[in-house]
Image (cartoon, rainbow, N blue to C red):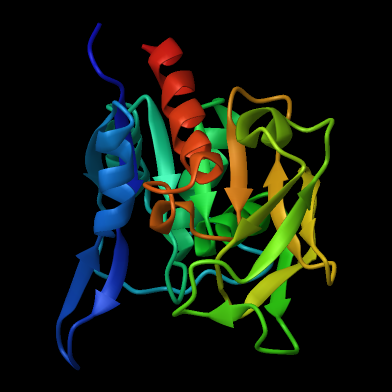
Length: 228
């Protein structure tokens, strides 16, 4: 059986005042390879850097949308990676995957993209307690036992890392299935889809030593194998 192809949506990053690059995090692609998938990049069809905001509106041209369709349709599943910001085209990808039940995993900013793409809103966290870039584990999360996330991770309470400044102020068309002790949302999902989930933490930084974090990639890629 051929390995499932997982598309990682590349993000714009300004290298200097006049040049714009796209990037894919090494940890994300390595987690895919180490769990039996093939990682490829899904590239933005233009050089415009447009931040995703609440009340997102589709702004791609017809040609740009078809360029995305052709890239996504090469894949058995898609990952929206983390980062300091999110582009509007990522919302388009999330909505397309939701509409056509293409397995999707959103990580940190990717989770915010999923929330916004389905009509929710994002706001800043009042304190900086969730932004700890140098620590492997920062706090625990509690997972709803009736959720897909619980079946995937395999435990009701797990420790996670935490390096984010935002959280969901409203969630629509998704189930909130895990929270931190202070109530900050940590995992959202659509249980009616094959795999449609956003996690606020960064399992790609822990999967080599943490079986619960690796389970996220393992089950995601196994779901994508069934797509093939």
